[in-house]
Length: 316
Image (tube, rainbow, N blue to C red; front, side, top):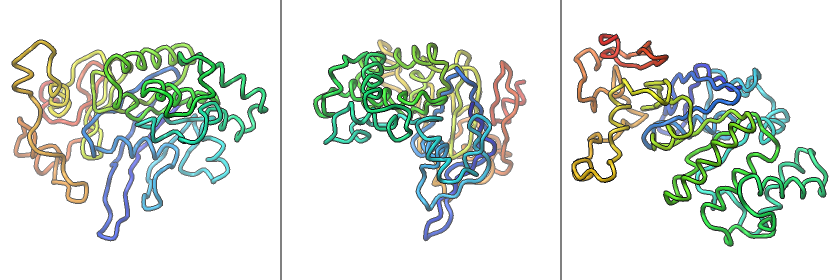
């Protein structure tokens, strides 16, 4: 359904070019959920926005983005406009900012149906009621304004909007970050159900590996604009960065993990001044001398897994 082939995104600034995404290759089949993880600034959201060319004009996209076999990068504006919402849709982070505060939510859900001429006004109203019930909201909520809903309800509205035109792919960018744990669990259960019942491909983005593992079939981990690991969500990580990202979350009821979190010191590198070799080596606790000079590509790491680490190769 979706194939990223050598995707690179460069922001052209007055101070020079900044590589935000570097050679990302990833595929998602119909009915499959893939999670994309990484720290802030790793390039996750840039990947998401590039799929439907929602990046600013300062961004240059290289490589191919194939949506059901059609290259999004090569689409003219008319074709791209037709694909948005109907072929692929996005659930943005922070529903409060994604909804128009002065329009009723029913009108906002109906808008893509009317723009794409998939329904008349009366048919769209029926579809809105169906979508609200599908995401666990009563149909009468169509008359509500965004400020009259809770955070979890607004997120459900965003999911209903994404489903309105029956897209083949949904991109969810941090859909549960602003929600409390109980509401987050409800939204994740809803997403799992929709994938199974609608045969939708899902690309879900988050910094929280536990959230992604709960929903996704496969996980991909990004660092400094590159993929450093991909593999099944059910098996263990092999790359040192993925392991550190996973260990950064404290264990409930375990004082040792709460008082001494096992995260990484320092910050990700500035995309404009990337270190040589493996970009992770300055923070890597097990780096070798060669890591500072020789870049490492993704390589087999067992269990249908790829990892960009020389130590993985030695262990395999």
